[in-house]
Image (cartoon, rainbow, N blue to C red; front, top):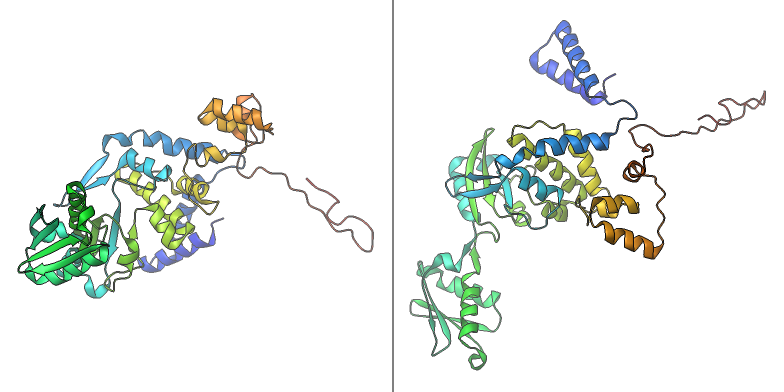
Length: 377
C-alpha cells in the first residue's frame, strides 16, 4: 500500500530509534492511516483544490508583510507581498537575499563575521573622507580615509570609467576627463556620482550581511544577491547556499532548480505565518509555472494568457481585447477546458485519474480468439 520511499523512511527511523517489531508495526500502521487520509479519489479536481488551499490562507498573510532582520535593519518582504512576487514571477524583487552556508573549517562565529564583512560591497563613497569638485579645472578630488588604498582606487576608476584619468597628487586622487572642453557642470556632477558608486571591495550587489546561528551552522544572510560570485569562493558550501531570486537561480542552475525554489519560498512564506499548506499543492503551481522550460507568471502575460481557449482567457482579464482578437482571427473554442464549460453550463471535463484507455489485444495464434479482446474501454 505504501510507496517504496516511505517504507524506506520507516526502516530508517526504526533503526535510528531502535524500535522492536511491535513498535515498528504500530509505526507502519500510523503512517498508512495518515497516507490514506492524504490520497485523492479518481475524478477529484486537484486544480480547484490547489487554488482554494493556497488562496484562502493567503488572505490572512496581510497582517505581517515585512520583517527587519538583525541590527543592520535588513528589511525582509513577507506574507502576501512575497507570495505575489513568487507567483507573478517578478524579475525585480523588493528584498533580494542570499542564505550563505560555510564549509566545516570556516563554520565559526569569528570566521563567519570576517567573511560577512569581506563580501559586503564597499564603494568609493564608503572609503572617501572628503569629495570636492574643482569647477575651474573641471576635476574631482577624492581624499580617502586610508591613504594606502590610493593607487588601487585610482586604477579601478580608470578601469571602470572610460575617457577619464585618475592621478595621485599628494594625499588626493584627482579624477579628470580626457576632453575637458566638452564637459559642463551638470556632466561633471554626473561623473562625480558615477565615480562614488564604483565598487572597489567586496561583492557587487551585496549591500549588507547579518550573521546568525541556526541548526549548528553559522549562516550569513545578505541583502542583495550575486550568487554566481559567492559560489566561487572557497569558504562557501555550494551545496546549501541559495538565493531567493528565482530568475538568478534559473540562470545559473536551470528550470528544475527554479521550480524547487518556487516551492521552497512559497512554503516558507506560509510557514512563517503559521499556515500549514500541503506541499503537493505548491508542487502543482510550480509545475504549471515551469513546465515549458521557462518561468511563467500566474497572470495575463503568463499561464492564464497562454490558454488555448478564448473564453478562458476572456474570463480572466481584458475580456473585450481577447474576444475582439478572437473574432478578427476567426478562432474556434473547442470547449475542452474547465472554465469555458462552466461558463456555458456544461459538465467540466476535469479530474485527476479520469481518462479513457483503449487496449488492443493480440489474437490467439491457435484458436483464433482474441486473447485480450479487440478493444476494451
